[in-house]
Image 1 (cartoon, rainbow, N blue to C red):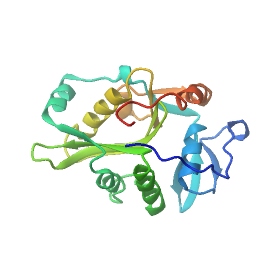
Image 2 (cartoon, rainbow, N blue to C red; image 1 turned 30 degrees about the horizontal axis):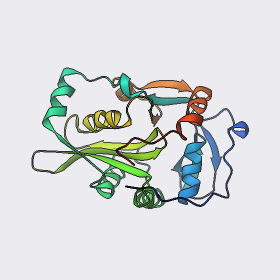
Image 3 (cartoon, rainbow, N blue to C red; image 1 turned 90 degrees about the vertical axis):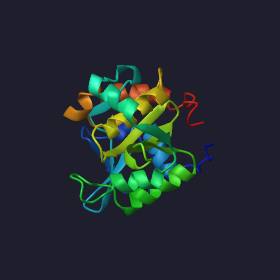
Length: 217
């Protein structure tokens, strides 16, 4: 899926002006050019109490693709499920946005923005399927150069979201980086570590101008 060029954003994301806090700005918009510019500068949108906020965590969760940890049980799950790419983006984001999930945060404006970015070739999904083709897990996010910014994942079967992450690490490959925003014990068990904001921004500055993985191109 080729990427459509985007008009420049009128909003400026300048890390030099950000506070020493995970939340760095409020307002702006969710136009494609604005969202991509934010990621290029190390920020991402996440609403809270109806307000559009922009975040750049002081301790950023990242996964170096070659560092992903695949246990024996996960290795069996990788063989048990089928993985597809960009076949059911809307189904994946709707599953991630399910309001009954703990910590659900994806509202209608965010959903619509990322569906639009998918149509423009910037947002991608990885789907995990059972033997009958049913969607049982997956993830979605943005590909900006060699950076894949993961947004959310879900599962309806054991290990289904983990299998999607394994597939993502293979696609992103050596030289790329997967941004998980924050780390959690679950993500840490899969190889996610924390970088300082400074380290993350230094790395992203070059990553976003590198060629994207061939699978997204």
